[in-house]
Amino acid sequence: MSTTTVGDPPASAVRAKRWHKARRSLEGVSFILPNFLGFGLLTLGPVVALFYISFTNWNVFGTAKWIGLDNFTRLLADKSFHRALLNTLYYSALHIPLTLVLSLGLALLLNRELRGVAFFRTAAFFPYITSIVAIAIAWNLLFSKDAGPLNQILGLFGVDDPPGWTASSDWAMPAVIIVGVWREMGYYMLLFLAGLQTVPPELHEAARIDGATAWQRFRNVTLPCLRPTTFFVTVMLTIGSFKVFDLILVMTNGGPGQSTLVLSQYIYQKGLVENRFGYASAISVVLFALCMLVTVVQFAVNRRRAA
Amino acid sequence: MTALDDHRVGRGSFPVGKVLGYAALVVAAAALLLPFFWMVSSSLKTSNTVFTNPVTWLPDVPRWRNYLEIWRVSDMLVWLRNTVVLSVVVTFLQLFTGSFAAYGFAKARFPGRNLLFVLYIGTIAVPWQAYMIPQFIFMSEIGLTDTLWSIIALQAFGAFGVFLMRQYYATIPDELCEAARVDGLSEYGIYFRIVLPLSVPALASLALLTLVTTWNDYLGPLIYLRDPDLWTIQLGLKTFVSEYSAEHALIMTGSVLSVLPVAIVFLLGQKYFVQGIATSGMKG
Image (cartoon, rainbow over all chains, first blue to last red; front, side, top):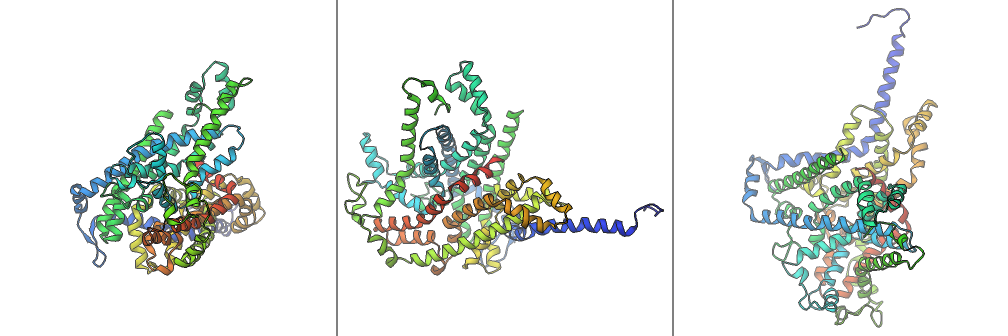
C-alpha cells in the first residue's frame, strides 16, 4: 500500500523484522507442541467427539449411526439411570459439606503453634496419596458386619444393633461416603492451610482488642478472608463428588442391588462392559452438563457475593 | 473448631485451649491412621485371627511368613515391575512435555496462546469419566489397547502438569528472560539454561504427584490392560482379593506392599507434595 520514499527503512529490514517475529511465534508454538499432540488427540478430541457419539447408535462392531436425540429420550425412561443420578446426588449432598467442614476444622486445628503439628499434617494428608484399592480393601474389612472392628467399637458405645455397612442397601452409601471423606479431607485441609496463611494477623488482633469472641473472630475475620479458598475447594469437591467411581467400584461394585450405583459407573457399565458407546456417551454428556452447570452457578454466586 | 488462637485465652492460667486442641488432634490422627494400623497388624496375623471378638489390635506372635508367602501365591513381582515401568516413564514424559509447554504458555509469545491455555484449563474441570468412552474408541483404533503404551499415552500429556508448572513460571520475573533475549539467547536456551534450573522445586512437586498418581491408578489399567502379564499392582491386588477372598491376612499383606513404596516416596518428598498441592490450589 505504502509507497517507498527515501528515509523509510529498506524493505529488507522490514522483511527481516517480520521474519524475526514469525520465528519467535514458531518457537513459542514449538514449546506447546509435544504436549499438545497428546493433549489434543487424547483429551480435547475425545471431549469434542463425545457430543457427536451421544447422538449415534454405536455398538462395538457396527458403525456410528445418527439417531438424533433417541439416546437422551431413552435415558428419561431408564430406571437404572435415575437411580445412578439420584445416588450421585446423594453422595455429593453428604460428601461435599462433610469434607468442607472437617477439612476446614482440621486446618484451623493445625494452623497453631503446637508441638508435633508437622506430624499431624503428614498423618492427615497420607490417606489421600495411598491407593484407593488398598484403602477400600482395608475399610471393607473394618466394616465387616459381625466381628468387624468398627461395629465392635460401636458396641462399646452401647450400639446394640450396628449397621451392616457395605452389606446393607441402606448403609452401603454412608459407608462409601465415610471412606470418601476420610480419604480426601487431608487434601482440602492443605488448601485451607495455604489459605489461612493469607489471613492478616493484625485483623485478628484488632478484633480481639474490640472484645470479639473466638467465634465472632472466626465468622467475621477468618471466614471472609478465606472466601477464595472456600470457593475453589467447593468447586473442586463438587466435580470430585460427581465423578466418584473407583472407590465405589472397589468397595461395593454399585451394590447391594443398585444402592451405590453412580453415574460414572453406569457410563463404564454401558460403554466399556456392554460396548454401547452411543448410549454411554449420552450419559457422559449428562455428567458433563451437570458439572458445568453447577460450576457456572457457583461462579455466578461467588461473583455476586464478592460484589 | 473455633478460631485459631483461642489457646491464648487461657494464657497465664491453665491452658484449656491447648489441652483441648491436643485432644482433638489425637482423636483426628487416630481416626486417620487407624485403618493403616489395622492393615499392617492384620498382615501379620493368620487369616482366621483377623476377625476376633474382641478385636486383636496386635497379634501375639507376628507372622512375618505372610510377606514371603505372598510372592509365591500371587504374581506380585510382575505387577510391581509393570507399575514401576509405567510410573517412571509417565513421570519422565509428564515433566518434559508439561514444563516445556508451560514455558510456552508463561514466557513465549505467539498468537492464540491464551485461547489455547483456556482449553487446557477447561478440560481439567471435565471429569475423565465423561470422555473415557471416545478416548477408548480412539485408543483401540490406533491399536494401543492392551499394551502398556495405552497407560503411558493416557497419563503423559496431562493438562494438570502444564497448569502446575505454568503457575510456578509465573513467579519467575519476565525481565530475566528479556535480558537473556537481548543477550542473544534463543527461547530454547532460556528454557534450558535459566528457567529449568530455577524450577527444580516445582519439577520435584510434579514428579512426586505424577509418580504417586500413576502408581495408584486403578481405572486406567482396569479399562486398558486385559492381559494378566501387563497388570499393575492395583489391578493385580484387586483380582487377588476376589480370588483369595478368605485369605484376609494375605490380602492385607498385599495391600501393605502396594502402599509401602508410596509411603516411602511420600515421607522422603513430603515438602514437595505440600508445595505442589498448595501451588495448584492457590488460583482457581
